[in-house]
Image (tube, rainbow over all chains, first blue to last red; front, side, top):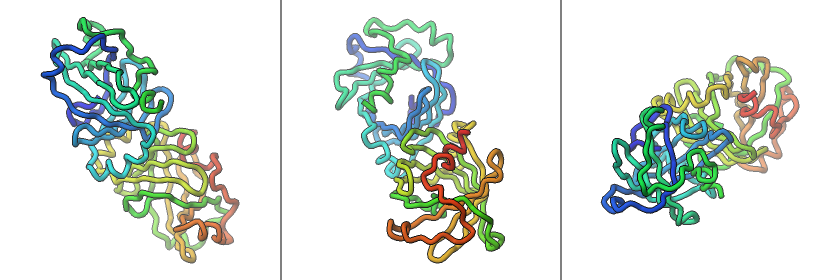
Length: 159
Length: 159
């Protein structure tokens, strides 16, 4: 997960849910387009992802599965991004992300476009394991799909 | 193959040989230390490599096998490199590279260090397929190992 362009270098603790319905607050939420693609992926969730979020570009390395993953991210200049992006051909996806504040966390609602239009998921990131376990999902969340390969972005981009 | 820090964005045409013996000209050749590691690798030669060559750092995406490969490379700032490098732990190698001019080409002689000390290979890059086929190896070259997985840098870094 990208933190507003900051360089991130640590463990991410995150849960993912399908959405039962889209909350009314969505219209008032900040949103932006995301386009991302994968240069290379391995089993065990090891991957190198390129992402363009609005006008900001990044390269992210992730490894690990489930709710706890290691993540390393750098910002890319437009030129660096342009050089690498063609390497993700056939391994891309597009979505619109809404940032919905909820209790003490930020819920990211992703509405997929293109081949996966119709899929809507929510991701919640936590500062520590305790808050991750304690999280009470809002009523508009559906089934939890944390760690389910079928809903991983890598899988969606490759299939 | 890194071209003296230039950003490279195209097909690379390259052959690789074991070295029968080290040429006398090696002592007079330009040389530098290379340390590289792999963030992720797939079959079909798809890989994302980080490399430090002297004080210059780069990230390279490659795909394809054998003498013809697609390659995309960007320079990294020291800070970008420092963020990503820990992701290559356990997937690294070190070598000293000598640049030996020969006829109209530059031969790169790589003397491996660490776990693979004793291995010495030469790589030659060509501007086109015709010069690649026509190349006459110098007498101090040994067997050609172009495309042999055993001598790929990825394989050497992972084993």
